[in-house]
Length: 217
Image (cartoon, rainbow, N blue to C red; front, side, top):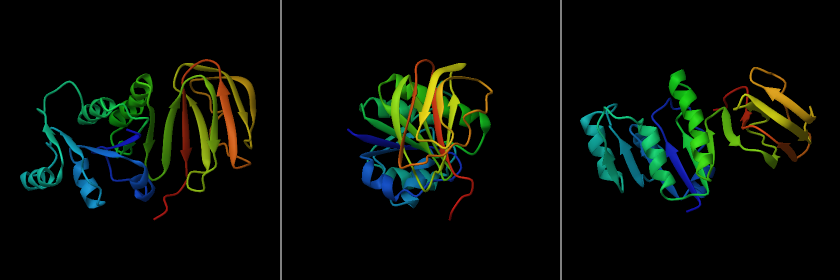
């Protein structure tokens, strides 16, 4: 399976789903995220969670439309989103997209970003997407990044205490073999000067965040 999309129970700051409908092969909804999929005319391949944030009628509606439905107790070690993630990883996708996981409670948002590390450790490329941001996590290596009219700002943020050997080519603010540590603002709000740029680093774990300043409706 190439790509799986997971939609969480967070605020509805979703991106335009149209391009993702073409790319994603399997959709998993965590709890109330199932209603969001139905609202956007996206089929629910699997709905999971304790479903404690919906009414009995909404639950029945989800059960009627979901191809698979798995209910869990409210008191459990994992969040509904993590259960959805573990179900997705069982299918060994190449890419995994997370929607509806940002913009609400800060504790939930921070741990959801950390789930990108779990995804990467399983050999899958993960991505968090909302109306204003696209977040990816990388291990040492050399990578290309394409310009985007939707997410023009590009920031590189250390996920580990330090990033060593960070080099940026094709950017308005290039870098060569720099060490960037937690708390540094050196790599915030960069931009590409051509359609494709490259970034590389030798040690650490890096968050790449593409963003935009205003939400277009």
